[in-house]
Length: 418
Image (tube, rainbow, N blue to C red; front, side, top):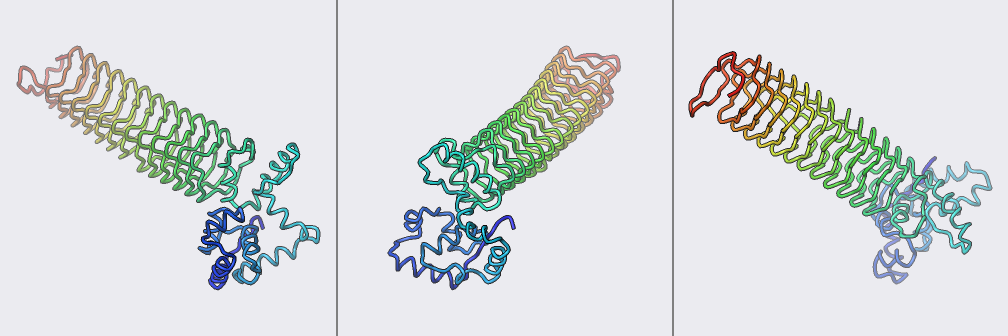
């Protein structure tokens, strides 16, 4: 039995409320201040949460002059008694001390012994610690209070770690479901296989961290710093990454379904082969990003910066790239059917062999662009700037060009530039 939990009965809560009044406490908050029990733990006790650690439950009962056995749910009481009976006599005598030392800073005047005890307590916490108490300790300003290298597999779900300093923490396989980590410092942390589902990481700094195989479903990562993070094989379904910094991030093999990346910085990011179908990337910075073989069908890239980006052999069918910066970008052998490139800047862009059927390139800047061997069937090039563009070997039948305010359709097959 790794963790001992206990839930009070409805009648037990009534008794606890009466004892609070008898002892002269004006509020539960005052009770917590007096007994040094966290407000979160007290709230969970009076709300009959099923996740109250036994040591905390028992301490609250003791402070209220109540017998924990008389107010605990029958099923929980039986489980705890059976557990305690299975321990040898030595463990029975010391069980309370062992549990309480998990999250309690011992009043030891010897600093060296105190530091050693803190490390030992943390190791025990993987089995017995009250996660809300532990969260409070992690937020403590006491220097070196907890060794963040020993947090692997810890359960911190539903806890508040706002602005916590978790730099270089080892949180592999940890459970941070629904936790508040907004503004937290997680620089160079190891978060492999951690669960952050529904967590709040707004403005958190995760730069240089490893997030491989991490569950980031519905996570709030707005304005978060994810510079040079490893996100390969992570699940970011429905995550909010608006205005996040993902420069030089590795997102290969990452699940990005229904993600919001509008205004995000993805410059130099590795996105080869990823599925960004229907994703909002409007206003995003994707300069020098690797999007080769990526699926960007129906994606919104309007106003984005993709200068020098590699989109070779990608699928952008139906995508919106209007008013997008695409100078020197690589679209070689890319599917650009039905794409909206209106008013896009595509100076020196490489579109060799690209499928541009039904694409809208009206008013686009295609100066010195390479459209050789491209398929331009029904492509709209009206008012596009084609100075120095290369159309050698392009399929221009039924393409729409405008010359001297007149649409000319099609161009002669030997035409190279307009």
